[in-house]
Image 1 (cartoon, rainbow, N blue to C red):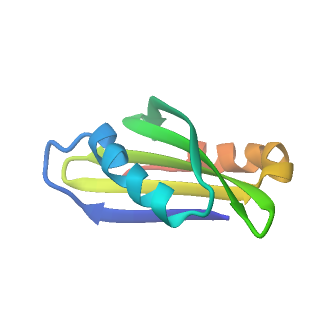
Image 2 (cartoon, helix red, strand yellow):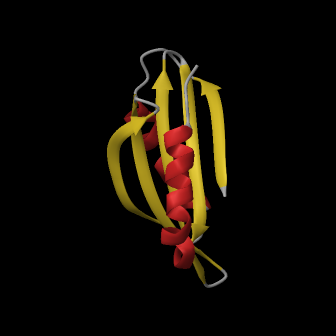
Image 3 (spheres, rainbow, N blue to C red):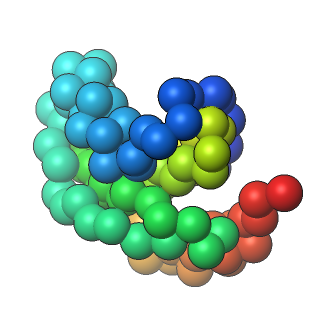
Length: 104
């Protein structure tokens, strides 16, 4: 699954701030969740923050990758979710979606 959300944020908000505020809620809401990694990166040429999480539902492990970018007063949140067993297989599709994302 791939999701895109856009919302307004105060101008000057950094993606790392949003991710830091978001992670505790994600960890509390996703069953048996843990953060696998975090890093800075680029989304559509814009500075972004990335987190990779792992969680388990009914004995099945999933991976969730989130990218947060801020342009002026707009936040873009791109989320990818797939079963862990097929993460590498669908990863190329997720990369194409991410690389095709554009900010207008």
